[in-house]
Image (cartoon, rainbow, N blue to C red; front, top):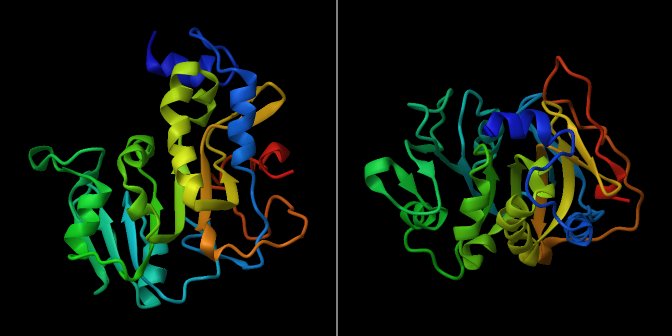
Length: 267
């Protein structure tokens, strides 16, 4: 069976040729990722549609942004650079960022689970060390924004917990979430979320409307979601109702209907 048939036809329909993930496991994972209301206001940075993200207004003191996955838009990074941050970008599929800024530092490499100079691969830990050598316990705060087309799982498996804690704010677009219902895929993907949630809490989720939502066990799982997290020591919990879509949310694909975040992710 081709990956296309599984991804485009079977998974969206809730059909899994292999073993299906247990309902208790899938519900526990979704429950662990429920959004925590925070006193920090959310602000939007980046373009109006795809590539723009909501983040907590807690940027003071963050001096560095690491942003693997460049593609054709760097508006998010540009706005952070204009705030004085040093921006580290990496993507082997492009020759350079689409725009220039004195605070941009680009490497033509893919962020991966292991270092391989011959293939242009580098881990997040190695990249961080090379850019901020030597990293000390009082290294300045950083932000991580990552959209690397499904490679996020292997990268998160490999990243050290010490480095994760250096990122005050993390924004990741998670891909192929509709495959969580497949037991084999779940075992590969779930540890990445568990590792993240040890040190960070989810404060916003925006489903990407490019693909359909999987419905299983009473859950609704969008295929791709932009997830914003804040380190738990910076989290200021608030008792307030969450409403989706957030007023600052904008659909990624302007040619398709907006996809509202299902209640199982926040209610």
